Image 1: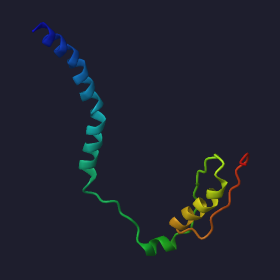
Image 2: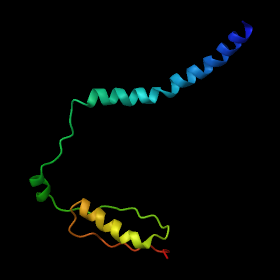
Image 3: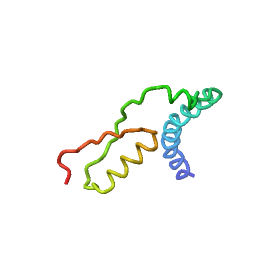
Image 4: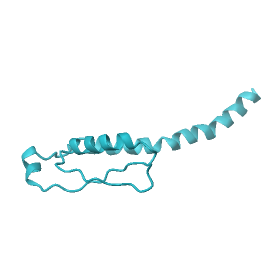
Length: 94
């Protein structure tokens, strides 16, 4: 009987920690539930064609994968419908 009480007292801080660590998930769920009725207003294709193209940044880590950087840059440009993808040279690659 004494062992059961000791185990129960050890589990109380654990239960408190589980409850506390779940509060962020509860916050995210509440934000979702309160905002899900407002869908994001995606612009129409016609609206996108009237807006001028802007530059975007593409982060390329320098881990000597120079053969795939060009293909990745081209795919990113194609995915965003960019007419011209700026060529960036990273120093120290090689």
